[in-house]
Length: 288
Ligand SMILES: NC(=O)c1ccc[n+]([C@@H]2O[C@H](COP(=O)([O-])OP(=O)(O)OC[C@H]3O[C@@H](n4cnc5c(N)ncnc54)[C@H](OP(=O)(O)O)[C@@H]3O)[C@@H](O)[C@H]2O)c1
Image (cartoon, rainbow, N blue to C red):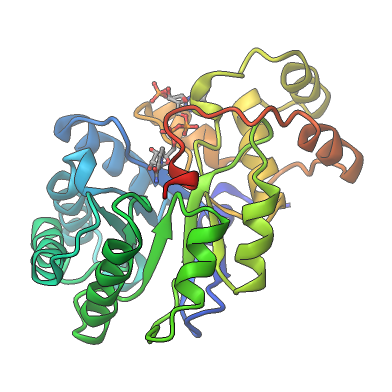
């Protein structure tokens, strides 16, 4: 059984870029204004979170980076290298230079010196844009601006396309997709596993849409946890990197306090069986 601090310092290997590892729990930062981002990132750091998931789209890269920097300044025992900061490219493009410039802007906006993981936010834009954009990510890694690259919302054919590309120099380390008991994504997860790509589970709390579901509520009562903790725990026991979002300090702490119970194999199966392919926000996995 693990404490919150131990849960938040758990790291998973990234098989496509050894010896790189990634914290298993990150704070999701979607739909947070800059000022909410500042207070949430500071609350998360105080709780012990080390991973933060931002994006160009979220308009909070600067607020996230500034909050991390100010916390590091006042807590010298924690270093930049203990933090894992992610951002994502707004749109793929066939204009290589525009993508390289955009990546540099994200690095500068964060003020963190480098980005640990930079993702293509979606497969939209077509094959040519996806591959040219990936080349720009590879070159940003080789230039030291970002430490690793990954994809998000990639369906099976997009993963196969990238992994089968004859010019591929650097493999993606993650595919960030919607995964929770109500959308288990087994097919995409299978292809990711085949290629050593770690799965980052977004919307692990089902964006709040199934907190009152009878199975979730019944099972949380059985374990003595909250519905949110049950959902985070499910994500962790499946071995995903999980990204619960909250802007409330009490929930930020609650969502990481999941090391004191374990969901049985039978209950994991019951939760897996809730799959209804529920999309909470968008689903670009079948983009042409
Ligand atoms: N790559 C992509 O396309 C993509 C898409 C979606 C999400 N993401 C990433 O994944 C992260 C998580 O996804 P998400 O933000 O959509 O949804 P989520 O984390 O599944 O759920 C967030 C919702 O749950 C509420 N909540 C949080 N903790 C709770 C608790 N303990 N009890 C009850 N309600 C709670 C939050 O409200 P409060 O804030 O008020 O607590 C918010 O409404 C995002 O922030 C983002 O970083 C990526």
